[in-house]
Image (cartoon, rainbow, N blue to C red; front, side):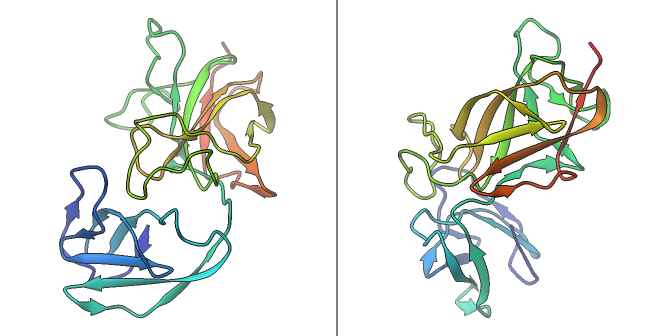
Length: 220
């Protein structure tokens, strides 16, 4: 997500592969055009192209109607784990038995997010967690595309901590539906119950922030 001002009118991509121009706005990252999913006056959501060098500093430049912004450097690492969250609630979906009424709900305190179905998770539940920055995969997709055609697994060993306890990772790779988004499937360990149990990811010497993404766990 790139934040600033004067980017352009509100627009959202409606097809995949994502285009590199949206509402007459384009972004280059390390000299390579980036696919865009969202543009507003103050924010652009873009995918860092797979072709960008995975270490060092690269420049980000926004172009609107032929007018270029100044070049802003960003640091790029091979991995930089982060769990997607909303108001501190990790985007962690309960994926246990489909007959369970909690199936498909967010693992957050019941009723905590208006408009969404939320239930606390339980020990041994399977979760689908959405993340970013998990690094290379065994078969990179075309930049701007999703991974609906095949499973693409991460190649760097991943540890998931729930309540500071290691969790069994079932799958770690690219999400089939979403461009540039990783999906991690895990089992909930026997962690202490609570409404804000931290969910963290560790790989390549980096650990996601403890307070940034939490789940709710019930006492059975």
